[in-house]
Each structure stands twice: as C-alpha cells, then as structure tokens.
Length: 284
Ligand code: GLN
Image (cartoon, rainbow, N blue to C red; front, side, top):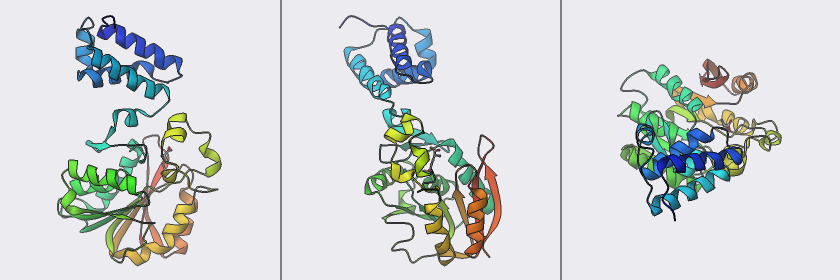
C-alpha cells in the first residue's frame, strides 16, 4: 500500500461517501478518520501530512464501506451520545435521538431534584438511554427496563454498567407490562410510532438498518399507545407520572385515548424542531 496522508485519506473518504449519496460526507469522513486514528478534528486539521498506518487504512476503508451501505454513524461507530452519556448502539437498538432528550427534561421538570421518583419503568427500553439517563439524574431511584428484544436488553444492560448505574437497574424481556406486578412513580416510553405505510419512505439509514420493532407502530402508528394506555393506571402509584414520546401530529389522538383510560394530560412538550413530541400524563 502506498503511503496515505491524513489529508489524502480525508479527501478520498469524503469523495466515496459523497458518491454514495451520504448527505454530510465531509463531516462523516472526518469523524471516521478521527475514530480510526484516535485524533480530534483539530489534529487532523493541523497535521494533514501525517501518514496513516496500514492497519488504520484498512480499518478506515472498512468503516467507510459500512457508511457507504448507509449504516447510520451510530452503528458504524458503535455508540452515540445521549444526555451527555455514551451509549452502545447496535443494529438491534434504535439510535438514541436528541429529540428523546425532551422526555428526560419533561420527567426532570415533574420531579425536580433529588430524591426524585423512587421507581421508574421504561417500556421498550432499547439502548436503555431513557432509563439510564434518568437514573443518573436521581441517584436514589431504582429502574426497570423492558424490551421484547433480548439482543436490545443485552445492550441496555451493558450501557447500565458503563454508565455506572447497573446496581439500580433491572431489565426484563417482555411486551409492555407483561409479567410486571409493581407500581411505578414514573413510567417512560418511546414506543414504535411510525405508521407502517410511511416506513419505506424513511431515509435508508433508518429503514434499512434500524430495528423495525422499534419503529413500526402499525397502520396508523398508534398500535403501541392502544396497547399501553389502557394498562397504565394499574401500574402507577398515586402520584405517578407517565412520559410518552410520540410522532408529529399524533398528540391529540393519543390524548383522546388517554382520557378514555382514566388518565389526564399534565403537559406536553415540543422537540428541537418545535414539533409536539412528548406527552406527560397522570391518573385522573
Ligand atoms: N424518532 C424516530 C424517527 O423518526 C422514530 C422512533 C419511534 O418510532 N419511536 O425515526
């Protein structure tokens, strides 16, 4: 292999990604190059003439290949930051999105500082990002993360360990409240809510690489809420609060369902794009 400098590697990777239709090819190329060389952006910029090792070149071309196949950056790198914590991400877990931080903020607004809720349940926990973030906010809280996917639960367990809250988190394989008898002060969920007919129109990163189990909300996107909402009052403590994520425009329909099932709306929140994304409920 002929010597390749950082600058050449960056140019080549950017071109390859751009040719594959990757939107922010330059940024992704820089992040991948930084990852394989373990150097930050400033270093790549300051020392363009530094030569990559053969090993680094092989690793870079492997990562660029995955990105060309439109694997999301979170899966290519194997992790994503959420709530200033680092979460392992695999093809079995939905990538934590900044919009979902809205749910953590909404929960923190409801309970304030310590001690916070004594028990928290996260239904469809995926990477565990909601539960784990909340457990880092309130060091006295205990949490339960539920998911249908054992592969996702293994990732969530690992994330609980690396975030240092594993002694306060339990994980359970199942569908929503299946096998659960406890009541919780706080129940959070980012369930699948994309209407099935819309799935195919999502960007390739999402539709080809993220778990459909975490995305597909049935014909109108509301299947998960129809399963969850009727059960919630059985699992809430007297002062218990529910914080749910939902898709654009789904708020009113979900509110209506909630009212039919003994719940009242405490408040709602919008995401970073200004779209209503999060509903806070409690028992009537
Ligand atoms: N926010 C995700 C997206 O738009 C969907 C997540 C979900 O269905 N819960 O891709």
